[in-house]
Image 1: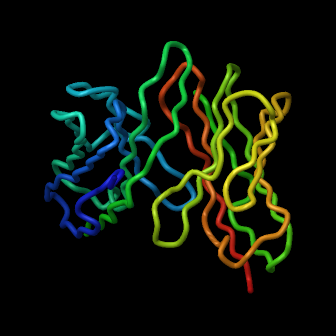
Image 2 (image 1 turned 30 degrees about the horizontal axis):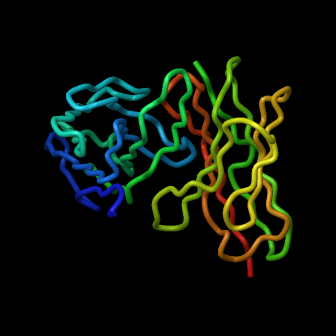
Image 3 (image 1 turned 90 degrees about the horizontal axis):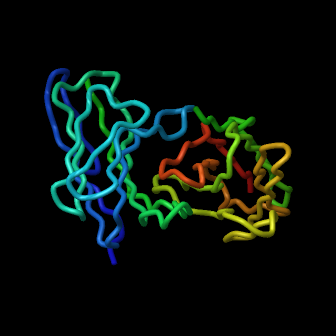
Length: 117
Length: 113
């Protein structure tokens, strides 16, 4: 099992450029998440998905779009990159909830370090 | 909205010293609680988790955490740290009926050999 993988590992963009980050998981998880990690702020949820074809906004969704066309993949897009989007991006996945009980242990990918100049 | 506070941003210790990292959360309902660790240059890994039962939870690498419901706290402890414990530690909370984690700001721990 590869677990959660992310591509690319590093990227440098110029302001206004676009790019897509790819996350893939081979654990048959229903839920997938995109976070950004900034110093002193922990991880903040950008968007998430509770299943194929569904997405929802997290805490900091502005400037990002996502798609979940296949269960195992979750794409994060930046249409017009800004310096404020310089960050480390982590993808995670987890099992679905069962009834009213949520055992939401999330498994994380290795991260993508993005710099926007 | 729920929030998670980690009181110490940076901690510097010598090997064999004891470690305690504070974590408090604000949410009135039932929660699941987690501590994740991020070693330099690596992704987040789960240290331990609490869902229910014994409020003293033991995790990997000699770490433990205690859930004190009345104080809304989930503090992480290790009796004797090693240089290899140098890392950033994150507390995280999610409501029992939800599916989103809220993370604290993290605590950077440096263990001097």
